[in-house]
Structures are given as C-alpha cells and as structure tokens.
Image (cartoon, rainbow, N blue to C red; front, side, top):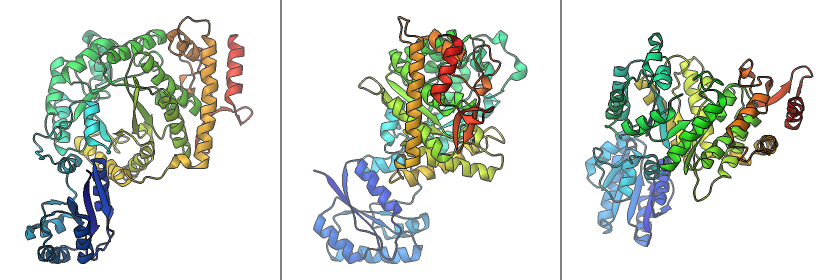
Length: 547
C-alpha cells in the first residue's frame, strides 16, 4: 500500500517551490502525494487530513518569522482541538521561520533548506541520518542510485603543491558540495610518473598537482575521507597506461577510467606515441576496465571541437568513442558532453549537436552496455571578468540540464583567471547546484524546438555519411573498420577526420577549414565563401586519396 503525504503552504504564504520539490522527491521514493495549493487555510488543510488519513502532513511557510509562528500556533491548537494529533506533521521554511517555529515543539521534523539531499532521502526512507556514518556510496553506480533523481556533481581540482592540494581536498570534502573530485595531475605525472628520469622539474606543477609517489596518491585519498566522502578519480596516464590505471585503482579507488580514443599521442603532443599505437593502447585500457566491470569515459569528441572541427566530426567522434568502448567490453559508459565548444556556438546549435551525439551514443545501449550522461561547460568559454564568468557557469549548467544528466561536471568560473582554489570549487558547485534544484523537475523540453530538431537531424544525416565513408575505406579488412586502429588512423591521416588546428601535424591532414555560422560550426570554403556539404567534402578527400 502506498504511503500518502499531504502538502500545502499555509496562511497567506503563496511560495510553493519548496513543498512541491519535497513532494516530488517523496514520489521518487515510493510515496503518493497530494498538494493542496498555496495560501491554504488551516480548516481546509485539516479537513483534507481527516478525509485522506495520510501518513504525513507537510506544511510550508516562508514569510516573516513572527507571522509564521502565530499561524503555526493556531494550527497546533486546531490539530489538538480536532483530535488530529496522531499524524506526523513536518515543516519547511526559511532558516529564520524554521528557528521561530521550532519553539512551538509541534513538528516531528523541520527543514530549513540547509539540509543535504541525502538527509531528506534518509528521512523519507525512515532511516536515521547520522552525517558521520551515512553511506553515500563508495562507487559511481551506488552513489548515483542513492542520490537520484539528482545528478552527481563532479569538479576538477589540483594545485601546483601537494600540501595545498591535500588541504584543499579536505576543505572541499567538508563542504559536502560535490560527489566526485577529479584529481588533476601535472603533465610530468601524467606522462612520466614511471619514468622520473625523463621529467623536467622546471615544469613541476604545470597543469596540476605534482604527484610523484604512490604515497602521494594515498594521501590525496585519505584527505577525502571526511565530510560527504567524495569519490576520487584521475585522468589516465598519457603513456604507461596500464601501470597508471592499476595504481589509481589501488590508491584512490578511481571512480571511473577516463581515456581518449585517438589523443594523448603525437596528435595533441601530450605523449610521443604514434597514432596507431595510441589508439591500440587506449583501446586496451578500455578493455582492462571492461573486464573488471568498471566504468569508462572516453574523452574524445570535445577535443575535436576544441580544435575547431565542424560539428559533424564532433558527433561522429562521440559515437566512435562509445562504439569502441562497447567493442572493448565496457559495460558502464560515461558519455561526456562539453558545451560551448567552439566558443561561438549558440545555445540552440549547441543543444542540437548534443542531442545528435546523445541519440547516436544511446543507440548502442543494450543489456550489456549502459550509458551515463555527463555534462559540462567548455573550459575556454569562461570570460576573465569573474562576475560574467559566474553567469557563464550558470548558463552552461542550464543548457546541460536539458540532457537530463546523471553527472554534472562543474567547471570553476575562475579558470580564465586562475586555477581553482578550494573556495572557488565550493562556490562554483553551489552555483551549479542552484540551477540543478530549479530544473530537476519541470525543465523545458528543448528537443521539441523545430530549429534544434532540424539541425540535430542534419547532423545525424551527415554523421551517417561520414561513418559510412570510414567503414567503406576499411571494407577489405578482416576486423571491424570502426574499431581498427590502422583504419581510424588512416581516416585522420587523409582528412576524413580533421580539424583546422591540426595543420602541420605529421599524423593528420590539417586541411579542413571551418566557420561558425548562426551558432553552428560547418566545413567552409573561404575561396568561394560557402558551406561545404559532407558529401562534397568526403568525395573530394576520397578522390585525392585514390581510395
């Protein structure tokens, strides 16, 4: 039998967002709810209680403390007079109102808006909430299930000093504003952790924290064992990938593996691996985690967009990343969608690109392949002006919620000015959390917008054309052409997969020109000043390559 909660804003209070969110969360956890409305009279509320015989009565008041006290005092008297005091009454309001109402000793529970989601869920499930012993979930999937319907919040953190990073993790964990701290190692650690003799110590701390020993990683993990006990994760190495993966699993219980498909190679200069070797080693790392049933994220598509590849390539690379993960036996796939990349992308065209990616990626789902959606702001989209940057963070968070994410990767608003300090991480997560709270129920459906739908469908059509060209190029192979390292490397070498910033790169064609028009990024012919269709672009490449 379903448990019933009746909810209402009482007296002259018309603010209903808080009580509605509480009732919606209750429905997610097995309750039936009935909302009576705003500014409900005491008699109307108690008539409903007497008639419905609920398990719980949720009362909200968010105006002045003194008036709230007087109204609740009348409610208490009326409940006692009518013999309805056997029911459980709970209250929600602002901190001042909640503190004043507490003096009446009437409600079995009072919420003032400062509670953690986990605390409210524990209450609804009839569990005692002990913030020191609460089980937040010690792996990605468990933590996600415990927090639903809210997404997990992730943030990158790593300062050029081990001591500062350790103390910063402690501060962030105690603030309980996020679920996953992504450790940012410096480039030396990513590339040369197992080859310290090759490190250039003049570059110590460049790009993140200078992790040098296994003990360093254990110290970072130990620092996180407080507050809400956030999960830790780190990027894979740019070489010695398997050794680094094993180390991260052993020391920080790496929440999921993050590895590219084609990058961390000569293609981006982050290692000296040639493209074929990089693809094979990256695939092998996916396979290693798949065999252990550990989640994998393939950071691929947005790297092409960061280098100004046109949107069709970004969509195709998002699909190929997921496709290769599935091919390697990954069972839980974290699909990352980076908004605002390229920087000039409009909201509508950005969403269209993401919807196209999502449709292709989720077409791969089956009983052995689960996709989690992770959204984030584009790193280069943040202005130097810190007030504008906070607006950019809120804007990107708003767009990302349209994808109904499982994970929100918050990017600190300060990144264009300085590497995020603990206080910057905490503030950025709180900004994003407010956006999430406002959109978790009843967000607008942007996928129904005709302009967005048309662009999404155009990208899906062009994506199929590009995927077919890559398949056809490898049709003589015994292996699957979409996961064959040599075939994928060839697609980059001849320019089927290309980006303007790859000009002069020995592993790429670097001949593609693109232009952002009306917020969308197209392949573009600057001589004739016109958009190049994907059919035309591919036909020319195949003719020149004599395939």
